[in-house]
Image (cartoon, rainbow, N blue to C red):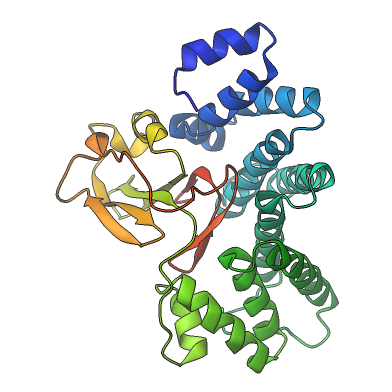
Length: 327
């Protein structure tokens, strides 16, 4: 996919709906635009183009997935933003649109793995939102007796994850959901089985390692993709923003890095690294090199499909740009 924003914009403005889809995806990697959304309430231009593409291309499952993915990232951002105005309303709106467009993608193509896995990620986000709203004190808490709403969230999560695993048996996002649902409901034997399989795919998952308590041989296969993490300080008291970028097209790395707020000359980088998967290898760190110069030409194995979430280091990350604000 080209990173020539000007050419994509010209074609999309002339009615090329494929260009509109590609432009929307490219613009969704703009970290400065995401920061403006969270701090100033500015709408994302990426959504305009992706919506235009998805609505005008009714048989394009990728366009539907990318619009769902964008709304899933917005939904996650609201959960992390304690000062987001109208948080509950906006989260419900973004959540509904993410679910609707993932469902649309699966209606177009029942074997659409990015949509199936993305829907699992959204439902896992529902579970995290429930935990926070119901004041579960610890990640070690089991499902409370009488928590009917929580039981329903977990049941839907497990059912959706089972469908995703049926499409892609080695999907770590779905495996993590199945393990979490079983463990929270007290089915430790089933949970340990899923955690063992998950740990082979994601050896840095500390929760899986703790709940498995058995040695597992890592399985260095799967999709090829890049993950950038940059943490930067925003106050003298240590408050920081954590930026993440998940890409399956190395050609987009430079374009996205140029637009990451953490790479402003006046912002102190607290931590930064570029990792390549599936081998989970650190290619560069901010301590040893300038992130603006990070580049990679090729990836190992088949590339992560556009819009497919990933599971790395015990976290589910959506494809594209995301960040965790300090408040």
